[in-house]
Length: 453
Image (cartoon, rainbow, N blue to C red; front, top):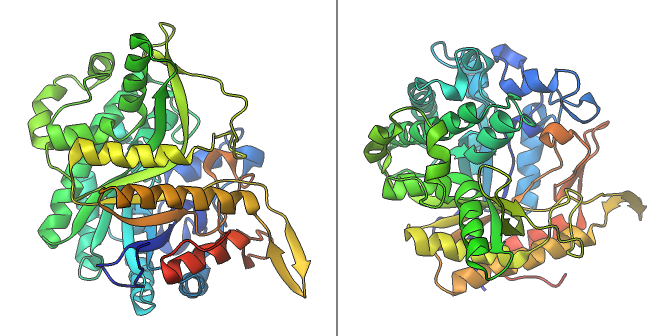
């Protein structure tokens, strides 16, 4: 098994991941602007129980305590996102120094603790001021994102060496603009496909801004991924699975960046809804990232259909184990995705930027202390870590693994009804309780070898 070196760049990194709006709370504190998720969650009927991120895990006020917790968990890296409207309240123009200083202090504390910061510039909390100007449908957003990135790079690039421009841009497009389950709550196929294209343009603009600040920076993005197998060996089902992979997974964003084209399996289906003349952009978008970020939770089988515009449907599989998100548990799917990404792109590095599971947790008392026994999550993590290391042993350049999530948090439209953390958060008291899975992961991070479950 690989060794781990806390705070070193030449060892396999064991880390944890979070997102700003999900954990920080205090969304309007110290001069911050509103984001689309603040407005969406405060709109009646959009989230479970009307939950929102006004307090969340209160990380904005408890960040020092949380960094100390990461240190106790032996983390070698921490992936977190910045809130664009905390730094630029109007999305462009005026810089809110207090917001930038928050992240400046956080980065310093992580480095002092020997924890490498992996920074995500955009994890879904688009400034509301930019949404009113068209958001991801406005082609000017690539320039807005470049401006934001330049401000951040000017403040942090002397210490932050690993960057992700975007997190799961597919979810922003599909859930936020096509089916409306996420902010900004749209149901418009043109808005969805325009947002796909303009997020790719924004990534390239951000990549270039980061490289201008630090040519040695490592810049990638974190893609949404679900392992896909064809429902049968029939030619039409194999083609359906290729369409599903092209739409749901990393090819939708990495194919344009590496090869200068959208995935062949789906381009003809999405082209009518992309911006007019999008083809003229493709050469300029062929800027290969420094690494592939893979977010993985589940997998499914796809069957051909003529009943929808994408030509595939997920097959119902009632006997497969599932998490409380109703996602199937398929550790082999993570191995499959890693090898697919490696074989397709041959990029120098792959990081598992998110992987984890939601299960219902119960706090118990044991010898005067609060404990959380979460055997299902522990088993999930053990099997998926094993799949990651198998792919690494087979030659894929996997450099690190980030468990989702460091702590329980606001799970978007599902509010506080789902828990993914390896650390339990009591939302009434904000007490943190390391779960059994967290203790197991801390030992993995300490030794680099899979401990017994």
